[in-house]
Length: 437
Image 1 (cartoon, helix red, strand yellow):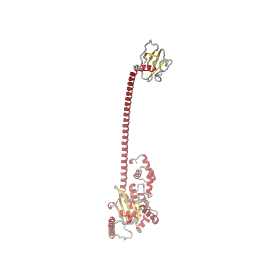
Image 2: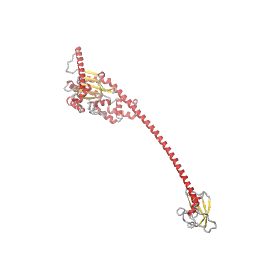
Image 3: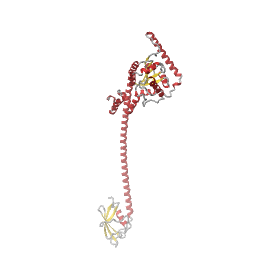
Image 4: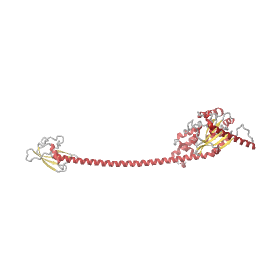
């Protein structure tokens, strides 16, 4: 089974399919499962439907026109038995009579076909093809025998479509009312156990009465004139082909022998079709896998490109943000520089040391630098703040506090407060704290 290039799961499904359907041919099992996308339950149910004569899920609609069937005599096995009502002579006379009768029969078939090209009979308007089939099936069961091969319970179109999809032979039986050979064929030949087993095991079996619309249509399609008529249709060289026609009475042994010969001669076409399907399915699977691999590779490349673009965008954003920060810092420094220039003119002049309201202040900057400056007690806290702010060594954002006890001067919340009101007297040491440190 390894030669079929199957996965372990597919191999297990084929084994289960064989057990459930009784089909031994691996190609047939694989083909059935492939057509149902390896859904074991659906494939088995469809196979059981066909084995019971019901159309499969692939069957065409009931009223659809039947697919074209190659009906060329050159590719057919033709078996002819004269109707039982015609005398049979032996020797040369019998041979001559048989040849003449076959010639006349062929000529009548040609004339009948030519006639059908120009004149159509009203009864060929098929309105209920499945009903025509089921009506004849009921007649066989009630009138002749209930022991017979499984009858396909669908239209001729559905039978052809299923035979094509399932790659199985389709045996067609056309019945003619009040024909003693047909009556005997139904009662004896179809009821024979060897016929039942062979047909059920090797083909689909479609039957109809030529007196019905569906039967009449198939009769003209297959160009039949002698009954009972048995035809064998198979998917051959990419088209459905009538590979054998059996006209006239035949017993069970003859029928099985003829079917065996025809099926043996044409079974290779079905096997070739199965292998082509498997090869085509494998090619499609490989193509799907290649497409999937390509799409995955494309996805990976696109993901790499996306990440690359995202990283590049992140870097660009970081550069823009850094540049914006630097710009903001630069603008802030420029603004502070301008503010210091503006505030310098607002700082009151330093009073004389001998001034009675003079207050000596020592500022200790965060850098450790000491600055001494005299103020009047009536000067305001904002004057002290502006003096420190305008000093080159001053931090940009700061607060001023006494040493002990530590008390932060309200230079921001109460800038108009005088130094004496702020509790500053005599000599003071004030500490400048950098709020951005």
